[in-house]
Every structure is written in structure tokens, then in C-alpha cells.
Image 1 (cartoon, rainbow, N blue to C red):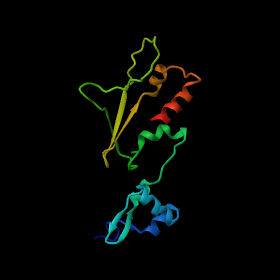
Image 2: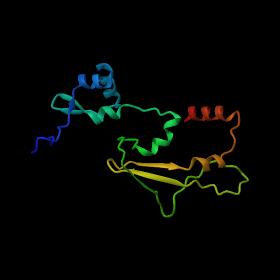
Image 3: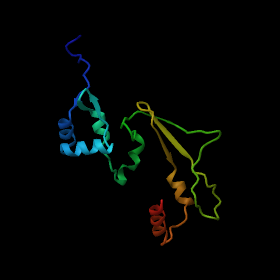
Image 4: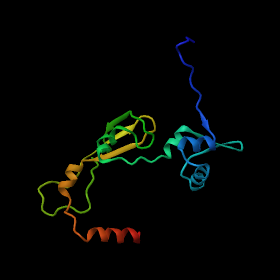
Length: 155
């Protein structure tokens, strides 16, 4: 092997203490996340171990409105950047149809969709045309938010 070539790096295992340090949380938090099923872990004999991917996946990202345009550039599951654009198809084209639309409109009520598949994990991200959706939606009524809240509480 040439001196400039680097040997393949061995995948690093993290202990509970190292995982807590990596995530900048306390060990009790890591144990709680394990009990609640919020973090993936592996058992090696009696030892609990984590891969870096396990630790990275527990982090939730909350994007600002400025980041919405970038959402299609990264896999939402594994954060891989190589995505292949395509369409999701059934026996015909698959469209999104809003539940309630404007009654009198000369536009069809189908919203075309596009999809991207991650080349690493196979996740398919499916996006619709939000501009078309906005033209079809009914204007919100003042009491709708209260009704939706009551409906969600009953569910």
C-alpha cells in the first residue's frame, strides 16, 4: 500500500458514555431513549454499543422556511445526497387529490407529484406541486382550526 493511501477505516463503536458525549446529553437520557425505543443500539455480549449512524439518526432537524427548497436534495432518513428523480406509478399516473377543493374552478383537481429515491437506503421522498395545491384549496374559515383540533383529539 502506498504511503498516501489510507487504510479502510474501521467502523467506530460508541459505548453508552461515548454516545452521551457525542450527543451532548447525559447517560440517563441515553438509557431512557433506549427504553422508549427512540435510539437504535446493538448488544455485543453484555455490552451495549452504537454506530455513529444510530446516534445521528436520533437527532431531529427542524428546518426554517429558507431550507424548504433544499429538502429535496437530501434523504430524510439517512441524509445521503445522491437521489435519483422519478415518478411513483400505479396502473396509471398517481396524483394527489385534495379532500376539499374550490367548487367552481376550470382547473383539474389533480396535483402532479415527483419522487426521488435515495441510492443508499432506498427511501422514496414524494413531493407534490404546492403552487397548484394553493390554487385549489378553499380559503380557511375562522372555525376550521377549532374543528380540526377537536377532530384530532377524538382520534
